Amino acid sequence: MKHILIVAVLALSLWFIEGYQYVRAEPKLEIKEIEFNFGNVRESQDLKRTFKFQNNGDTPLIIEKIRDCCGCAAKLLTDKTILPGEVGQLQLVSKSTLTPGHDSKIIYVHTNEPARKIVRLMISWNTQIPLAPIPKHLYFGEVEKGKRAIKKFELHHLAKGVAIKSIKTTSSYLQVKVIKVPGRTPFQNPVPVEVILGSVAPVGQFQAKVLILTNDKERPVIEVPVEGLIKGNINLFPKEVFFGIVRKGESPVEKIVISCPSGNYLRIIKVQSSLPFVDTKISAVSRRKQIVISARLKPDAPIGEVSGYVVLSTNDHYQPKLHVPVYGLIQQ
Image 1 (cartoon, helix red, strand yellow):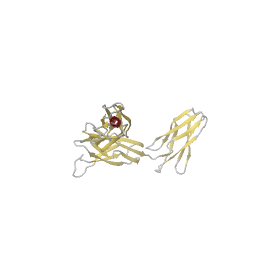
Image 2: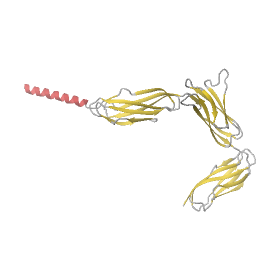
Image 3: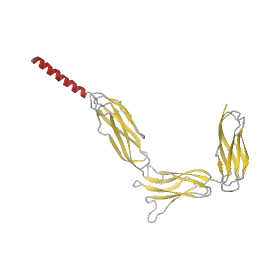
Image 4: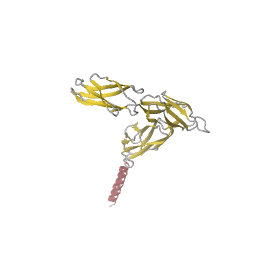
């Protein structure tokens, strides 16, 4: 009886020991840092941080998946299998934006640890911009030829020690003027700036930049894009000739209606085509002072892409020549 009791006790002890060992036979991820703040950074600055973690378990720790987010890339610097006692490294890479203020990025690491399947890592920062134009882009919209247009923006000092040296433009049609505010010295924060689009700007799409020169070594020049559309006296509809997809030998005709809303007398002096296989002519002049131009694709036009211009010579002072794009595709 005594021998049976001893055997039973030993068997029970062995069962407890095996059960205890079974419970501990798993990986265990230990990580001291799960968040990191870069503090104050400059705009468009590259940001990198490496997070270290250790497998303090009894079996291999496996990084099964890394789920990153927009604007932040996660890179495993070590093998995805971390043996007991070994250290793994994961690097997060991001870039600060052009907008001042706080920002953060979060990624999720999926592992095979039963008690910690997902680990959340975060990096954060505060973007400081030395000098911020508000708004960052100036759009004049549609401006009639011969008229001036004015837009304004403000320069806000967001960093200490940054000073404005001068303000200029990339176009002779643009002028900039720092507005004087009573009781304030020039270039005192914020700085109101007036941008004037001159009346001599040519007809068509207008693009230029306002350049703010500063004493900041990292960003000595700050650019403010400027756009607009200078409208002339002549309207075209449509603004291009598109023959579409045609078969070899076909001869489609497209029309352009030309009008002058200002009421000025408009005369088309000459109509030409840059393509030898496109015929053009003035087909009609309506009572509404609209001129219709016809463009015909000749049957002998070669197979391939059609790309060129219809050139209109007019009596208009601002728009003596108009170039109308011609497109199409000829197939066998």
